Image (tube, rainbow, N blue to C red):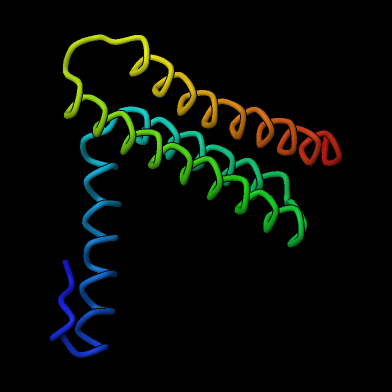
Length: 122
């Protein structure tokens, strides 16, 4: 955590270092995040091979970022729920299902957008 006594550059540095640690931790230890990074890599390879336009590639990058953000948030919510409520409860299930739905919905929309771009190049 940052402290009010830290200078602004130190606080900014700490915030970015915490974000970097979280990014790496997700990549190393969370299968769902690893899977999404795999799909993202595949999508970018397809964009390169089929020579997507700059605008298409930019939109694809926004879609990838959206899915990854939802996946990281979902993983954080699941970890917190598992910590606070180790036993199964219907409320915990609903929270986890809603988080998963956000990832699934963003992935579905991204897939549709990616396929629309791909079909324009086939």
